Image (tube, rainbow, N blue to C red; front, side):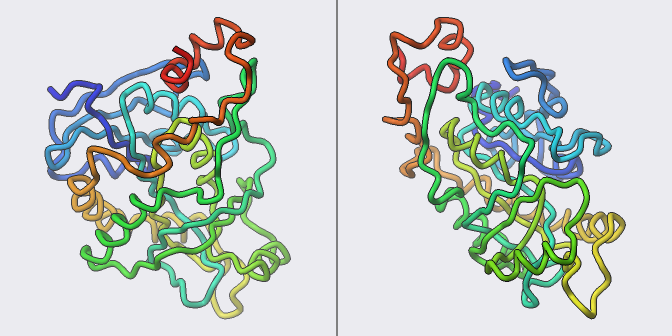
Length: 290
């Protein structure tokens, strides 16, 4: 059985992703964190000789809507398992003609249109300001793009992902506004995941699976849940192949800025940080407050 501490790669997506060939030595972990329980039990196993941790983002059976996702608990739990890299698989709508349903996008930018989500670990007795100019890890994004190409997918490198609150889809006016901004895809889950991953010094990248044209396209049907689910399920096998290809390529040692995002970011004087806060946040900030 692989030690829990060796699950250095986290995968967040639909529950079907961990039902894949080649995943061995699996076990379920029911964890608790200072921020509550994660979306579901985390499945730890070995894929291509590497320890991985799978987390169903919305819970098995898709029980949790985007606004209510316990993202802080999800990220904190993965951090305590030793995860240093997170691959997110998510469904998005296309805001551009050339990004067709069933295409994949590996975005490099985000626009935050959420309003009701806790988006930082640092909101009680300790303040930190991490850099977020480039919200996705370029190293991991590059590996995902290459693996997707080898898997035979139509994949687009780069692009701006608008994160909306949901759970309702966009109005036509909103969809046209996002297009006027030059955005490429729209979804509901990349934030606050990307921000919290950066605060936790975890490399984070997304494979965005295009399922629809939102509601702006004149000749295409408006987005529906049935459409999203049908196209997402068509991409499950492709996503599995991408994961099988990318996992053994992910470096053991990290040289990107994600790994040291908190260095010089904690602005609160150490002597003013309450002891219980230091203890609660130890998995994330411990190396900077010793």
